[in-house]
Image (tube, rainbow, N blue to C red):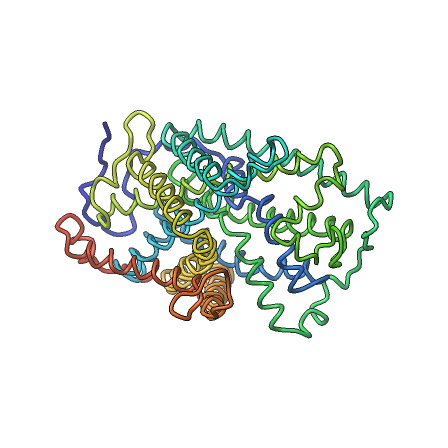
Length: 499
């Protein structure tokens, strides 16, 4: 049995309606941990580092920093909006309060869409990496087995999230320890190898790797690389979606978001430097420029770096993916919970489990939707699945940019109040939003090319078609909700005046 905490009608003003979630259970450390876990940092590096090196070569560390800049600016927007409206609906609530119900609904759709689609990718990777640990690893190539394993992982993490935030936090802490201890051992082994000259590909550190003058001799490559780097930071905003379950919800989650963003860039740049110094950026052997290794540079290096302990890096990636699977379900479920409470979705979405104090229906639905999407796309076309996963960048850029613009517009009346307000509520969020909007359109243009990705539909890249179709599906569903008796009142509300 579940209980509803709202009449389903829009809430007045900037108030945050009680939803029945377990308040104050998370502290700042938990918030930072969840923000880090959602990005799957070990897997993100393993899967993206080679791609960035292929485009930017030795300037990869600089590119990782450049990709971080718009993310940091948007993190400030999240922090400021959360301080005024600490609602677990985040972008949905903030865009609705600022620009009106349609913008809010589509912002919520962007969050849910990104989470649902990425869960298919995480499930697939988790299934593959689990079976890489068994025997000679050949079972990782069995599509049926990998798919069944991935679906089982989604079901397991859905169950964990449904049973309560404290259980989820304990599971998350364990997975975090496993992945970072394994990554730490890998990093130490890299440093020892560099010091001993154990790798024939070793390259000495140089500050030229951070030289923008050299990198910008090819502006197109910088833009391409920065787009790749930008999206490996996605996920830190999970801690904002748990604001109503965090101590001091108006302040702690925002601090957690900014701290986790800085920790992420430190991890990414430092590990990238070690890997580059050990393996180099050449196209031979374990070199990061070897096209045969670019889809997972850690997997290619593990036996050279760790010898018989190479399986540790497989464990690190697996733990990273599993922790991200769990934490990705959290914001999508709480986002749709908030949409139900505010009347944007049918009342059933706004119900929480009376005992576990979690979004019961929303959590189960998100898990089921992700599993169904993964199964359908896998057996329809694995190439189309890969391209639909590539289109996630469109969804992320959309709702991040919307949040940045919402911050500037909502607080426009306070920007002259102090230098702090001008920078953190105005200039930086606006710059971040413009950068993310540009990233959206640049990514869309790249995906339009039929040579982009693995599929072509009607002469256009499959990633573009997948992304646009899924975004337009949100428009269709919003129109349907506009005329449903249970959700019609939500669309009759107006945006709030500026602060």
